[in-house]
Length: 307
Image (cartoon, rainbow, N blue to C red; front, side, top):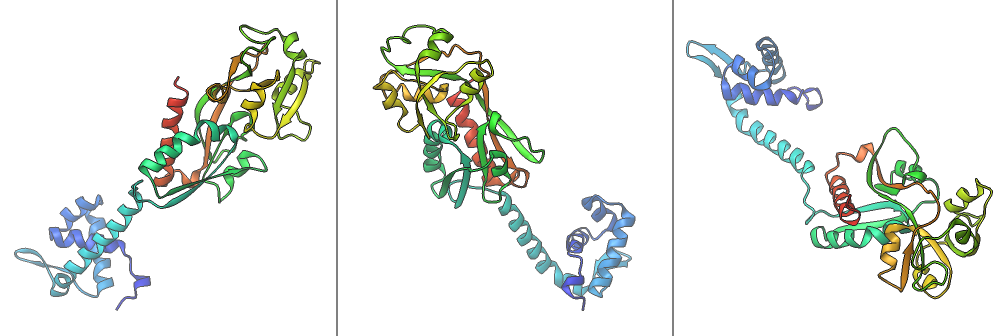
């Protein structure tokens, strides 16, 4: 008796077709191989099973008693294997239990997390979303085994060949001031007045600077930064109660003007726009639950920033 470790399980598929068709040529057509290759497969089956399997008779090919006794158990085994393979590809948000770890920043928390959790709560109640702040680069986070997705702006994401990237939308920098600000309300602001104002800055740099400061420094300029905060949490209320100018992405500014008496004004700087990217490892590209999460985020972004 052939041991399982020495048995070619692909022969079971050939056995199933041979017993259905009782013809080498027709079984070959179903397996998309030549008739001579199928004849070779039949010879291997005979060796592995130590049985002729199919025997030529004046009435055509007839199965042996042993082959007939194997028809039902082999068909049941193949059906079970097909079920296992199919179920691994199927995905039901309503029943799937899964934890997703997303490496991102405050921006995504403000703009994407509320609508994402509405959809998860409605369509995938057993899915858990875990947001983490990365210590190193976002590109390195995307390579980590414990991170499913990285969402961030293109200016801070590394180009790594084997990571998949999808642009979600484009954002730009604006300034936020309190409604009725004596210097900034109701129109465009000159670069001189912008620099002379007192600014609030969200920065995690040790130097307490940001992209605007980099732009100004490259031109031999500097602005007055009066307050540096590590996140956006307190920003709308601080700006609403002071004359500080706070520069930030437009999508967050749009959220803040709904929370406090604030006004959005353009910055007097020819600043580039930024693409918000979603990045994931190629090993997770075909995973059904992962693909569902990515599609959901893309759909949300189309509503957040229709183009």
